[in-house]
Image (cartoon, rainbow, N blue to C red):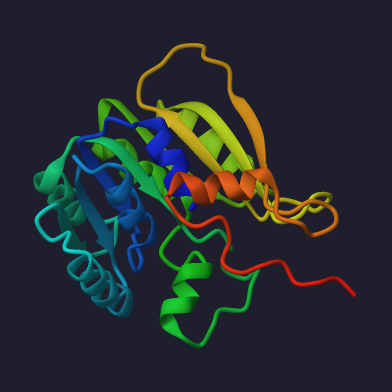
Length: 231
């Protein structure tokens, strides 16, 4: 949800949107909901995930607005197909896995393994693909391991992307971030990088204003269920 919100906020008037490694369509569908005038393209390599995103797009009656492409986002042919489907894009988003091979035990389930471990590349590959497909005035929004922000920031800068925002996602006050979301502009000057934190729960485990604001942004009820009584 954070990646989708950051993406929509980065380019609220986007007419052409690309979601790289769209999985089952979580970010793609949230973008479609918040950008009702946009046409969207999703790229996904995994067979199971691609079948699920096709079903989710159909169930939400988004077929006329959403084009889905199956393939590896690193492949030039896949990038060319995405460009033909709707590029250049005002907004490119991506939620790559951020566990390098060897740092985590892959799930025996292929879909879950690819969602967690960088078996088809990491944030660097997403940024390279995004740079090829974003418009000259567009934005790129990706998530990354919060412990290695330089992977996104250094790669983006090397590619000529200008970092605008760095948002750390913190599950509970006092804990380390789970991941970070980075917003880049395809063109820009010396705009200073804004570094903020999203904290889902306070030190006592109570949901924060950040949490409620995120749900409100997507038109969701304030919470799924009442807070459980404390012992």
